[in-house]
Length: 261
Image 1 (cartoon, helix red, strand yellow):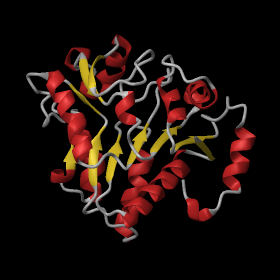
Image 2: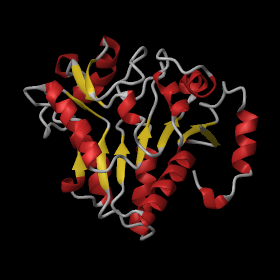
Image 3: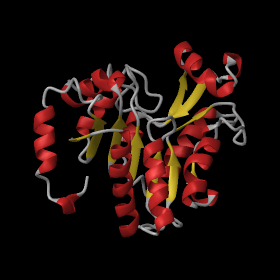
Image 4: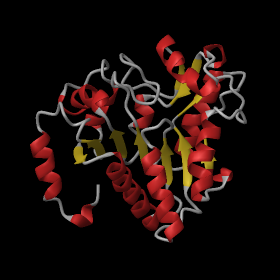
């Protein structure tokens, strides 16, 4: 696992966007796994700037969804499909035909989960999966004690998560779905490159557990230690609990530039 400590969220977004751009220059139809939430927004802004400057052309790129609400119509403005269309596909000029996501309105949710795993495999697998992390170490909607071998499946949202997400639904928790479809940890680990971005002091304990703690279901993100190409990008605040922070700074500073992340 490579840990890169950056000054701030914007720097992290630029670093990851350049990794995506480099991938797309080499593999124009690469499959990018994307996440929702506020953490990845600097990445999408930086990548959009590169597209507008002509530094990269993502017209043939493909995009895969990490999770989706169950029972929320795809056209609902707060479905994750809609959010990703606004924040990723439209700014980057990627057509919806190049989008892969689970069907959150399927009458048979389990079958929809299995179909999504098959779709990812048939697409050749995710080339780069962008992840955020919760304060409890969750990735996607894989909460603590999720199986480290789990596949795409339905998960029940905690009451706190529904309270937190109510701000996207006019403050009305009754509008927030109770369930989501999420890629499982086992599914996530099949991506060729995992990139986790964490910013802010509130993520410091989770980052330390992910990077320096044991691999354990109580911290789902710790499964990244098992991956052959995992990169954790953190700002100074999120790195504040890392015992090996100086080592991580030294190794990245002396890394050959051509390697990227």
